[in-house]
Amino acid sequence: MSPLRISVRIRKPGRLLAEAAALLVAAVVAFPLYWMVLSAFKPAGEIQSTEARPWTGSPSLDSFRRVFEQQDFGRYFLNSALVAGAVVVASALIAFLAATAVTRFRFRFRTTLLIMFLVAQMVPIEALTIPLFFLMRDFGQLNTLGALILPHIAFSLPFAIWMLRGFVKAVPEALEEAAALDGASRTRFLWQILFPLVFPGLVATSVFSFISTWNDFLFAKSFIISDTSQSTLPMALLVFFKPDENDWGGIMAASTVMTIPVLVFFVLVQRRLVSGLGGAVKD
Figure 1 (tube, one colour):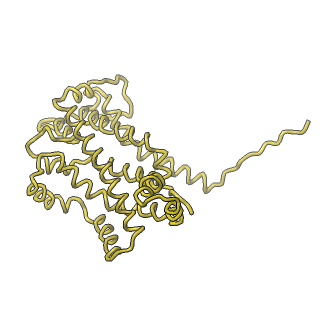
Figure 2 (cartoon, helix red, strand yellow):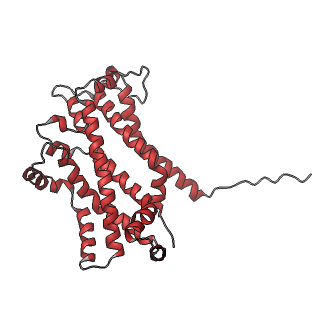
Figure 3 (tube, one colour):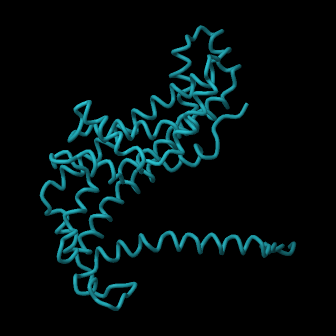
């Protein structure tokens, strides 16, 4: 009987240091989320205590009960879902068509247009909030969900177009020529061949669009002035900020509820997201 050969894998010190650094960064990033969830389950006495403890001996659901008993909380949640869903779908489709146009076609001012997309990413949202307010007012969109959907689509498109441009460019032109020889029209190639190939990139851009829209507070506070029935979920947090004393348990519980849809969306698209960030098609 031949002796067993045991191979011991020795990790290099550099790799161990990199893994330790990655774990430390992950712990630093995850700790605020842990503290948010912990505070949501803490009773009021422990939250107001001067001794901060990273655990609780008597978890309570009172904070979550106050959140779900809040008036129109369900409507706020539905409004956020409608706005985020509309922005994700619209920005993905428009960005796909625009990325295909600037990649596959040659036309005047194409380079200028791409530079404008890049410059648009550099302008801070806060600098455009007041001009957008007057624009929404002139269009009669204040106090409507359209006042939230349109700006978020506009701010999502430059990044999405730049990212999808690489995916469209990675698809060989020979594939389009072969499809044309087989009798496929340009429209059929666009939706039945090119669209599935760049779909991982669409998922990656959709994640960023969903997160930025779902967590938006600036536009919701600026464009929804009087009609609270059109408010979104981040506006529900204002109920727990009171002049005399803030309800930190309710704030943390509402923030936890707001985080759950983002986590669910991320889990559903994580496989596509990894392939989308890593690249799509190779010639």
